[in-house]
Length: 228
Ligand SMILES: NC(=O)c1ccc[n+]([C@@H]2O[C@H](COP(=O)([O-])OP(=O)(O)OC[C@H]3O[C@@H](n4cnc5c(N)ncnc54)[C@H](OP(=O)(O)O)[C@@H]3O)[C@@H](O)[C@H]2O)c1
Image (tube, rainbow, N blue to C red; front, side, top):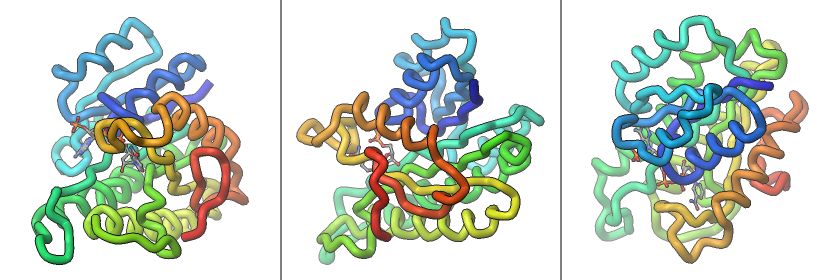
């Protein structure tokens, strides 16, 4: 059984990742900004394999405190799941530039920072994996309109993961961005294609099987490889 660390675990995809990893008898370090109000996550704490920790991925003090609390615990899988869509105003004629920067902070810079900080915990694992929940909306080869902040922050996240994978190849650490599909969460909305259970079931199957040869590539929730 493995130890999985998940960001943004209080709702949506992060919460369901926590549920399904626990169901498969793994140890989960589920992190979120406000554990005291994370009611759905707290209901899972009767499971002794669940540890809930405070972590705002964009807050340096919070990241410091979380990394210190982990000490030398070995982490098999880090899932950078926390993400934001950004402001409603991110069109050609109404861009909210502050919110664009905030989206970059959460979606691109925070996964890099946390991954680099937890490398010491990941490296001793048998098959360490750094997974960042990205989006096909950031794929350069996929034409689209609008949502400049979200798309560009995920495109940049993909590049970050590819570079990280190259640098960590010799050390045996796998690093991949994944696309969860269009999922019925607060972010995805009620018209989305996939239930959160379906998406997460697929993601976990992909993450379970990832090999070094697949590192640095972009994977869909159903195991298909996606173009950059
Ligand atoms: N749903 C989709 O269709 C879809 C498609 C493609 C990619 N994705 C990606 O999948 C990931 C999860 O999305 P979701 O659909 O589950 O969205 P969601 O329901 O809106 O949940 C987002 C999660 O991220 C957390 N978060 C945001 N900023 C944070 C921060 N600074 N520190 C810690 N946690 C933070 C939120 O915590 P709070 O409750 O504290 O805000 C929440 O737990 C995101 O990276 C998203 O971009 C989703």
